[in-house]
Every structure is written in structure tokens, then in C-alpha cells.
Image (cartoon, rainbow, N blue to C red; front, side, top):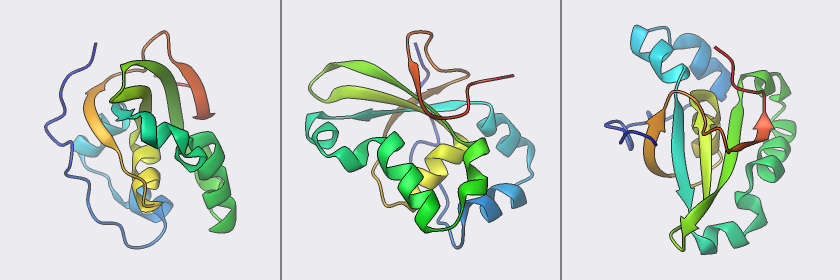
Length: 130
């Protein structure tokens, strides 16, 4: 289904708006990362907190930080998990993952894949496209 990410916990520390960070990252590795989705699992406790729903918390963060122009770069899909430790699976592109971490949210990264699962639904942002 997905491959384990070797860079699961290697996201750089951000200083400033995520849009500035993304536009300045121009390496080939960044281009490959941008085409992949990180699969993050949320457990039952995390799912109970409504602020852990990207469609609720991200739009508020973007509005409050005056970064709505960042919206077209975000793509998050969601799928129901299979057990108590993985109740919800989030498929986040690089931009979404950077923003999620900037918001102070935890991401239990369990792998990456080129596109979201076909059974996942778009939860926030723009649809997957090659």
C-alpha cells in the first residue's frame, strides 16, 4: 500500500511562513517529495479532538496567519484506518505536511506513496494531479 519513509522525522525546522519555505526549496529531492504523499496515522484520542481535523484547523490557521494564498498548494486526503492506533489515515502532500507541523500538530508518519489511495477522499485543498 505504501512504502516506509526514510525521512519520516527529518522535516526541517521552519522559520517564517511555509509559503516562503516551499518557494525557496528548489532541489531535485524537493521536487520528488512534492509529488509524494506522506501517510500519517491518527489514533482514537487524536481523532476525538476536532482541531486534529485538517479541514477544520488548517483553514482557520491560514486565515488567522494571512496565508490563504498558500491554499492551492495543499492536498490532503483522508481514509478510515483499520485499528485503534490508526483510526484515521491522512495522505498529505509536502506543502500540507509542512503546514501541519508549523501548526504544532503531531504526525505519526507511517510511509509515503506517489498518490493517495483510491479509496481516500479529498478532505482539504486541491485534488491530486500529475
